[in-house]
Length: 235
Image (cartoon, rainbow, N blue to C red; front, side, top):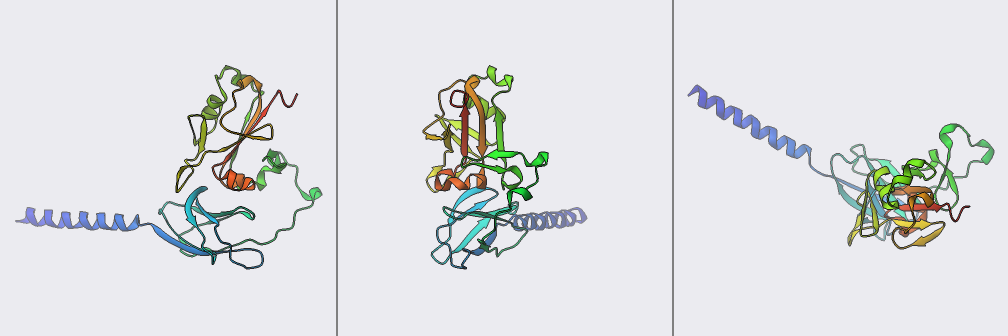
């Protein structure tokens, strides 16, 4: 009898532990409002979770509602004209975004320390510390790339979170309601369809812009941007 009683108590404890674990893994519902610099609602802004686009958008009143996994760390919002804003989730269930006008820092005030190396983001350059997300760069002048068979090979081996299939590149499994969102590919300043058929030895550099760092390309950059510079164009 004592053994049976012990087993009953043990099973009860295990069940309660399982229930608690399930509850602790429950998704968090986050709501909020997105406004512009004039405090007016921003409609059709896309909500991002941990730098990945979601199918959730703000309504005509600038309000959004989204469920996120417990492990989600950051929530962001991206619009065609205003760019990107990000916040730490930190167990908050209400997170509002406001696009305030930020004056540009005078050029003479910008530090030129080694960590501030310029990053090419397509429309000019920005200091790396001002780019909100990772920007991966491949230096085509490195002799090791001469042994690679293609540009696809270079990108897949050197950049994490990239999937290449049938001539398209998908970064961090970017998706919308209709499926995967391929990255925008820019070769020597020109938008192209698919991966260019040039040899790795002809590549000067490749920049991979992920998440909000590609926001300046608007809707075209929702799946990230691959910026390729060739030695042919830049000789």
